[in-house]
Length: 595
Image (tube, rainbow, N blue to C red; front, side, top):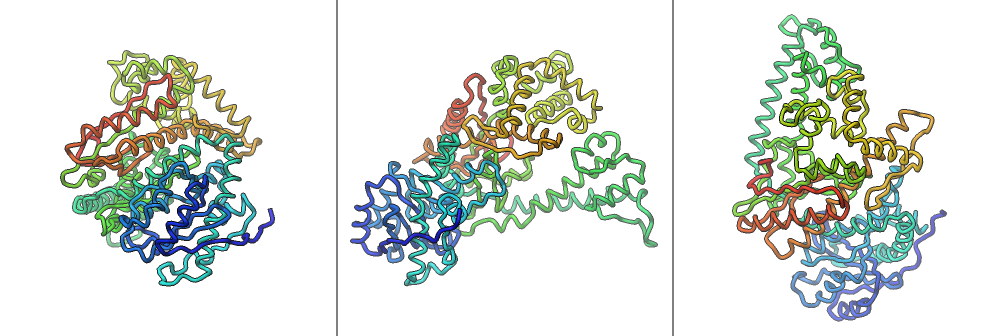
């Protein structure tokens, strides 16, 4: 499509009470409005909300808020807030989370009825990594219009904005109604309307989650960072000693040392000690050797300690916002083609599961955390999709699923299953979800290929319908070159049919996307239900990690909030799991911990 210059712009600049009343009256009954904001900073805690733009597509209204000193209570702004909060008027924005946060923080109101062209573009792209999703890219792709973004980084705090700035602000909002029309048609044709509804409904919960932030105890974090540093040093010293016999002596002053972070040097030293190190020294390939070679066990221990020290050090304290005393991370709503939410600046989803780090995130005085997660959600989704009666019955019984699977695989009574056998079965259960074959499973567990094949054969002898489902759905993914979640979220697969490894990888990825993506759909539904159910209470969502939601509330409200969290998460799951029971486990704690 040949780029077209932006069409002529018809806009009204409004900066006085009479203008606000008149403009709001003119657009009150419009079904669709382009929506955008201009701000003086990226962070709502450090800047001002300068402009709000609303466009019918014919006329764009540019509201200047500079002269208003109290945006939350000035009665002149009430008609504007009513329009923003009216769910029947669809507001069309690009990367709406940004605008929603600024409006909520500065005007104190929610924006309801959102169509986000950024999220819509990601859904329509269906995993195509070559697609770009900036407003300029999306506008050009869907409408052929080329937007001039040169004023984006101009000074929006100036007492008088230039005509060029005002035209730029108006133009971004003006393109939105036409853009929505094109994208809505594409969403409908691609059967992505339900997935889009999930994403648009989740916008306000995610925006509010970011505004809420989470409290990090500085002293605890510094103590843990120091412990991690000392632990890494001690383990490094032990590992150097263990590897020294495999290192050529190059120093007259004592033990020769190697760079423990050099895979090549470490692999050479291990081989010199007679240890059969594979070509790759990735953890999952080394793990089977750890029981027989203490050097391998120590190397894996060193790497874990090294990651803890370098990834979770004192620099995390720089993310604490001085204005709130809390960390306000950036949650990317479609952080992966599966639909999973990702997190950055900092990545709260990367915090190690052990309590040492998580306990540093706690509730302030007089508050508690309600920590709730879906138990084995991906396995339950797999049971639902496969309709395997034995799989479903295992969850209906309420028994420990991993223990039950271990009993089947090892052909023993459930009460005779050891902890090691249960752990083995747990790896197998989740290996099935992620489509690992016998070779990979053998590498993960130290079994030979034939032993791994036999274990998987016994597993599928118990869950026959599951085996058939995985084969059928895997073949369908290859034939159709696409995969969908329960909501219709789409992933298009690109692979070389002549490359067997590429076909196998696409099959695994596609089947896993259906499971993991449905889990993401459920979590986002739960976030919306929970956001609505917690309105006007002391509770607020402060974090989410894949199948887990963390809510902070007053201590006196914790029991009631825990029930609301469990109910919201169950209701969300029940939309997609009709046959398989869902288990939500909520606990109340002072810290983000397992207990």
